[in-house]
Image (cartoon, rainbow over all chains, first blue to last red; front, side):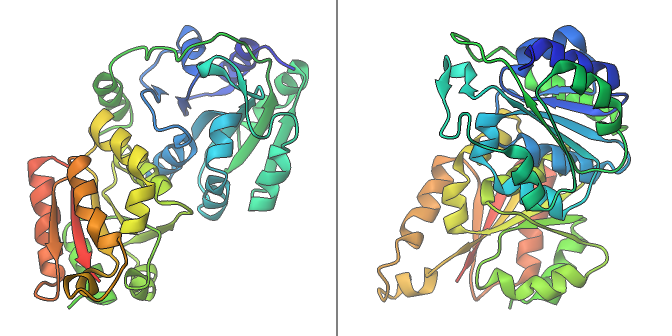
Length: 187
Length: 160
């Protein structure tokens, strides 16, 4: 199990100039590590739609690369998005932070806590570049490889869950986020 | 008369770059024309809420998408629609097939799709027009262009 902040620090070291879309509890940590116009805190959100949002961005911006930090609860809610991602190749790097909890609602178990193999699901959906890490040193050693090259890529990370959490606030209003993201993308 | 080639031509005339869809029996007849058109990218997704999110990403990335789905998909996609057109304020446009529209008007169906489609669009505050057998792809293009000019989301309901 990894500390969520430590796992995100690895991402911060290797994200380059890719767009990073954060969801749920990652929104509360990521701005402390990176707060550029290419960092998009998807909150308020429609739970589970992060991968699809990232796919649309990646399709619209070939060569840019889009990283989506998704939770296991979100992933379970839209498993079909793995199939969609597999069938529309784009440089999308989908990180599944699996803490086995609905963390931002306080820490309830999901329907699949401790039993779901997201790596196998991603492969079965047709995604060939799939990684799984439960030790921070392994993630650190392979992050450069996982976060480069052609997408789609799925990285399944076993993360320590925290209880008593709440939905974090967005670092800035959505309209401001969208405006600076668009400018950064040259629009 | 709505058919695949004429709809594709109308969408391209509006500058649409991507069609994100979950087809139904009527929209699905346009599959060959939409997928063969080199100027349109047809994005097949698994659920309609996902279609709204993909279209939103495309829009944020500078493209001009349209979402095609059946009204049953609209019912499924409510939270995505709420989030992307109201929280993120993205001016997405939808073409939504209304199953059993004509049969409902004639009192010949128990299908509840036509009962709920328009009230649900009104609840989500999504402006819409109804396109029936009197209309054609040009009317779809007009509705799209009007929403675009006003910088707002919108929908066209296709009577089925």
